[in-house]
Length: 79
Image 1 (cartoon, one colour):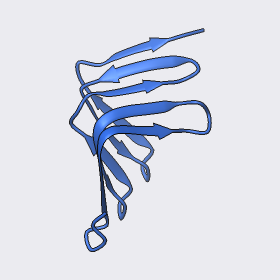
Image 2 (image 1 turned 60 degrees about the horizontal axis):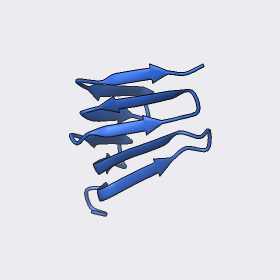
Image 3 (image 1 turned 45 degrees about the vertical axis):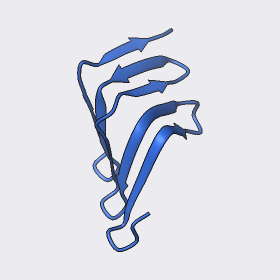
Image 4 (image 1 turned 180 degrees about the vertical axis):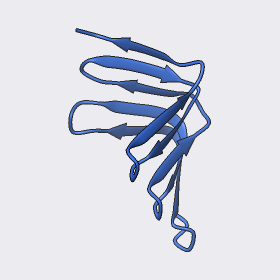
């Protein structure tokens, strides 16, 4: 963690779990704490109770509520 830059850098087998059952996996994730933006240029996979998503990268903006996946990307919805 770079406190001056408010930058959290996570490397190697990054796994984030959400309370609603979603799990994000990637090899590298950078989180800019000040503006609440997470970014990765490495493949990302998200598994959840109703979907699976794979993409070549991701940018998530918590303040705006936007998530952008770079492609190719594949989303599979389950019923």
